Image (tube, rainbow, N blue to C red; front, side, top):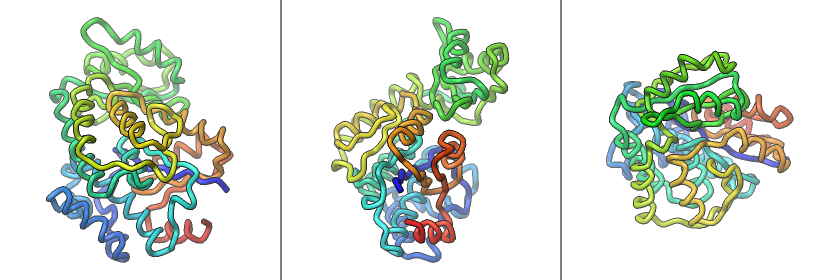
Length: 314
């Protein structure tokens, strides 16, 4: 058995997440209290009571999803005696989930990870005025074929790029709203089954995010980092890295770079991973893994029952 643990990104959040864990395990409650303290905000209340609109603000979503993932990690560790560093061959996270992976691998403290994600959320929101940028999901085209669609949408004033290469036939575009709207309009001419504009307020993982990348480069100078105890398969490389300076460099590049998740799954397959375990809210990444890497076992773990089941098998 060779395990890779993966951590979800934006879109997996839901009101009520983490509540069951906090009410049953002190180790989970401690995680949420530490994150609250680091941010000077009752984020746990927003996570468990909502309103949904407040939770989906990226400034809240990013640290909240990390907190739930780390609560699962701490429950496994403290209540079941299972440490990721003893079980994981690799960790990886989708977009903001890469920060959860870095925290789980011991690169950053929990408090610093929460602060970094708050800065990241604010910086990404402020990098581009609302209404200037957008994102769209293209279904039914390979990453290569999406390139031709992107070329047809771009002109000297407006552009979009492939932001998330999630799996074969699922690529997310990001960029100027004019280019995104054109992609939605003409994608079928390039063979796409569907092209849907996403309900996001900023063009994440595009060059338009450069101001946010610069903010993050400065923010990393203020925190203590350590080499990873578990290799982190980076979004921008789809390859493992353990050196702290390289991990920070990858996280800065990730703000404007493509999330190479399809290639991350291929890396796991090529390197003998038998089990992919998604730790945290939602089931997005385990769903992608089931489609992309059929020979591996893929599960999502967030509830007490799921944690107990995983602990039995680890």
